[in-house]
Image (cartoon, rainbow, N blue to C red; front, side):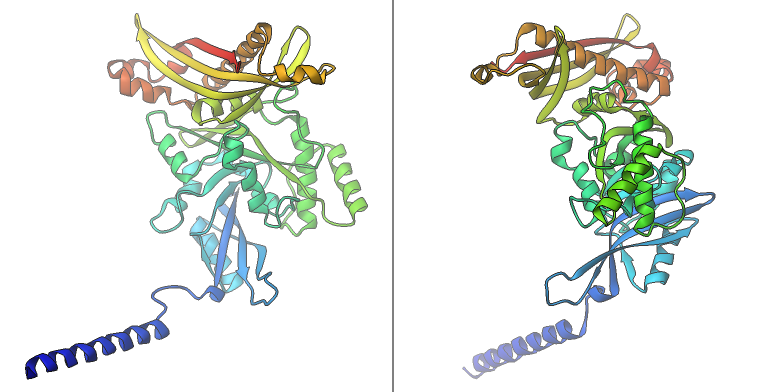
Length: 436
């Protein structure tokens, strides 16, 4: 009886000692966590290369003590060095804050990276416990530092406005080809040795390009893009971007920028789009896919919920909404010749037409006439043809054709791997039907 009493008493004492020990640890130890007010949370990183140095612009969210609820301040700090780690260390020395990359959601690389090996620039982000592999990666027009210094009507945080142009909803409408660090590494280090990323442009409101059906869309962005970026860079200088802008744009873009600034009396706000796509092969920049080529790549690579396809039939311009989309590529070797099959299926309904509309007839938009469907099939095939032509010309296997050759036609791999993009024949199986 006495031993049971002693055991019970000992258990109670042990319990309270354990509670006191846990409380002591809780109030005296940070368990490896960094004090929030001593931390600079990096929400986005812009990377530019100048000579042998990498210039890193960090968009930093600095917690501020506040009773009004507005307790976060966003600012841009720049550092440079031979590696990104060196540049981030300089950011630390400038701010007195320890930069954290675990919350970095966007990595934006400037056009200067074109002349350098991609993974020499991005390699730091793949280090263990350095950053999350889910961070979005994109190339931008001009300097990344200038792009991150712009203002947007969508969000007070520039990186968030850019991420909205790369959002899942836009990706599922084939208007952007969003990728993250993991996607890029898996593509580049496959048998295809190629990867892609969205190309972000800043536009003065009201001056963006047409919805992907204009002939003025060029493989390198065209004059319109240059004008928009010039306006962007002017705005970036007004908002405190370091250094002068490179390159020249149209005077019209600058005039629009200055006029808008004088009229509003504040910094010009910009709109961001990512309808073009940058191509890389063996870590080297190969060029840009224009809007229509990027659209074709998106419907092959991504799961599309609803895509908009403009086409012309009998002299009338139609805008079709495509849903229930199924698209993919397959490779076979037939009689010693590699044959690529591009398959596309979808349901179409009319969303717009350049004709006088009779409201009583709009209920029939789900029934698309045969001649319009033929025009849509022809437009899709044209976009696929332009995409494959661009890939062959630049020897950039974004569709993973060499990977398909290695997996399903292994015995032909050594014979065809070097020139398969130019040697292969292409068959198209495109079937767009009316919703009803």
